[in-house]
Length: 567
Image (tube, rainbow, N blue to C red; front, top):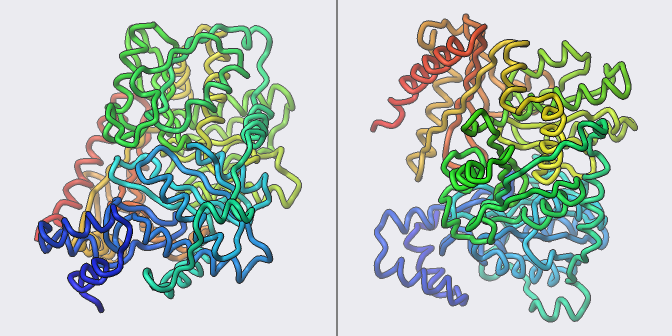
C-alpha cells in the first residue's frame, strides 16, 4: 500500500490545480507527519450518502481531484446501466461548491453524459425534484448538509430522486476504485460542454413546479383557522432556503415575516453559527433574540441545504426549542386529525419513521388507527416506502415521513426530507392551534399529558482520525459480542443486532438494547462523520420522572463508552 508520504509526492508532481498545489506545498514544507497521514491515509469512502469530508488537498479530502475521480466512477456506472444517461446537479452555499459542480459537469460531459445545472444555490429537495421532473438517470448535490464550514460533500441520487441504494453505492464505489486520480479521468472544458449542449442550466419553471407540488399537499384548514394571523421569524442559517421559503410564505398568505439579520445572506463560513445545525441552540440564538424583540409566534430555521428544519415556539415570555421528535409527533397528530376530519376512517393511512425515532407515534397510531412503518436511519428508506406505495397506487395513503434529526415530508413529489414542505406544515399547524388559543408548546404539553412523557435524547461520541475508526469498531464489537448486563439501575432484557436483518430491514451496523424499565438504547455509527450515536428512549407518567430517567440513562451510557477513549 502506498504510504501517505509517497502519495503526497505523487500529488505534488501531478496536481495542476493552483489551489490544491498551494495546499500541497504547505503540507510538504510545514505539515506534521500526522497532518500528512490524515490527508492521505486513504480515499474518502463512497457510500449511500456519497462522499463527505473536510475540504483540502489529499486523497482523504474533498477537492477537485477526489470529486472528479468519484464522477468518473459514477459516469462509468451510468453508461453501463443507462442509454443516453443524464444528471441533474445542484449545490449549497459552501466553499468550492461552484468549482465542484463545474468539475462534475466537465467529467460527465467528457463521458457523453448530459447535465442540467441549477444556476445558483438550491435546496437539496429541489435537486431531488429536478432529477424526477427532468427524467434524469441520477442527481448530484454538492453539500455537506449541517456540517461545519470546513466540510463539503457529494450526494448522489437515483433516477427516482431518492438517495442511491446500497447496491448502487457498492457498484459505483467499485467503479471509483478502478479510476486513477491523475490518469484515469476524462475531462472536457465547461465552455465546450455548454457549446455542445451537454451542459445546460435548469430553468425557473422547474422551481415553480417544485413549489406548486409542495403547496398541492398543503393541509386545508377551516376558514377560522386559515384566517389566523401568524408572525414568523425565519433564518436560512446562511444557506439555500431563503428564496423558496419566502415564496412559500407568499403562497400561505403569511404577511408578517421577520428575517434574521446577518443570517439571511448565503455564506460558506457560517459566521454567526459555526455549526449551522437547526438542532443546535447556538445556531438559533440570533433567531430567538429576534423573536423576543418582535414578539413572534415562532422561529423557523432551515439548515444550509434546506432539507432539515428546526423551530422555537413562544412559551409564555420565553421561546422553547422543540426537538425533532416533538415536531414529528405534533405534525403527525395534526395531519392525522385533518385527515380524520375529511375522511373519517384513516386506517389505510401510513406514517413512516425510523427505528431511532420516538415511540410516541405508536400511541398516536393506536388512537387514530393509521399504521406505522419503521425503517433504518436515512430518509432514503422512507423514500423506498413511498415508492412501494406508489407502485400500489396508494400515494394518497402516505401521511407523513419523519426522522428525529429534523427531517419531514408529507408529499410524494420528492424522495427526500424537505424543509420547505416542513415550513409550510408547521405554519399551517401553528394557525390550527392558534385558533384554539394554544401555542405549539402548549399543544406538545397536551400530547404528553394525553399519551405519556416519551422523552428521547441523542448522545454523540466523536472518534476522529485513524485511531478513532478503530475505537468506533471496538465499541460496536463489544456491544455486539459482549453487551453489558445493565445500564444504571435497569437490566438489559433484550439485545437486538440489526445486522441480522430485523423485521425484514436491510442488514445494518446497529445495536438495540431494551431495558427492564421499558427504556431502550440504540447505538449506531454515523454514515457521514467519525462518530457513534447513542439514542436514548424513556417513558414516564410525569415530566420530572422522564427527565430523571433520561439523565440517569445518559450517565450510564457515558460511563460505558468512556473506556474506549483511553489508550
